[in-house]
Amino acid sequence: MQFDIITLFPEMIVPVTQASILKRAQESGLVKIKVHPLRDYCQDKHRVTDDHPYGGGVGMVLKPEPLFAAVEAIQAEGEDLRVLLASPRGRLLDQQWAQELSREGRRLVILCGHYEGIDERVKTGLPAEEFSIGNYVLTGGELAALVLLDTVVRLLPGVLGDPESLQEESFSNGLLEYPHYTRPAIFRGMVVPEVLMSGHHGRVARWRRQQALWATFKKRPDLWERAVESGQITEEDLRLLDESQNDQFSDNRRNAVGLNTLPPKRNPRPSRAGFFNTHR
Ligand code: ADE
Image (cartoon, rainbow, N blue to C red):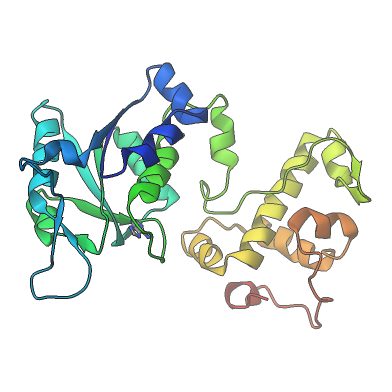
């Protein structure tokens, strides 16, 4: 899969693409990443990329000409493109969208905005789909472009060593991931849950599902709601969750789900229906 990143600050992008998974994915030929300095596409002597906003106001706006020129130069290579523009006004990037982009495998052109904004005709005229990485404002689109790049590349077949780990990780099945442990079995008095050392695959799987359910229910009511609505939560899941409410105060479990500061359980226990609308 090919990615083209158009930016005023290639020095922010290039080092990140030369490390870890992004580096390996390129070396193995699964991914091609090209970084295009926006100034290279300016026609004027001073290579000006921005100008004052029509209608007045503070800050500068990125001009349309170099951005159109850059995208058109890539289009001229003849491949089917999907053009994305990093913007706090965009569609929120989530795991599902990342999966869709990686499955689709189309060449992605990512435009990084800067300054106060970008001429609106870039969005409508190219056109470019806006994406946001969260409800906050970054100085520019470079960090957002890197987030998108990383999250899509790691989902491409063959990029990660163990494809099973993709199925288990947070968000991929609509739930947060269960907690992980490695040696030593006791670290500063904190113990690894006994079940993980039992060697009993069925009990381990059950414990992990229970932890994923509990963590999602407790920490991300929005995800929990969605998982319930989309029918991903079974009767057995609700039993597991109910059970984890019962014994959540064992030290192991509290360590495991990071809830050491949770206040003692209230009485009466919430009803099963309560799981759908009570998030304490
Ligand atoms: N540019 C500025 N803020 C951004 C955000 N939250 N997401 C994507 N691009 C941005």
